[in-house]
Length: 128
Image (tube, rainbow, N blue to C red):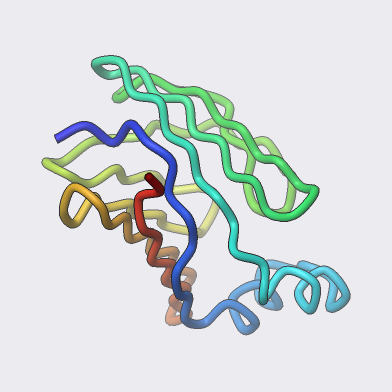
């Protein structure tokens, strides 16, 4: 199953607590909590380009499965990391945050970010 497509955020859990824990300023948390971000994924074999647009903020990461890449985090920091693919899941550890993106079915993308005991879960649906 290919990850390629555009997905719009449908629901999220734990946003405010997680963003506070990673040091995002309160004004950005307040602005961001109600924005329905759009994730666009382009997959060609083991190469990925992931673009997340949240209002005016655009975050783009390009990586190849199993190879070190510079990944930009939610706070804008660049971190060297290796993204691994396990079935329909993409896993990466950025500093102390573990990110798992799962293509649950052909139309549902679930991204779970974990920092210690804090969990931020985003569920997005494929756009037509």
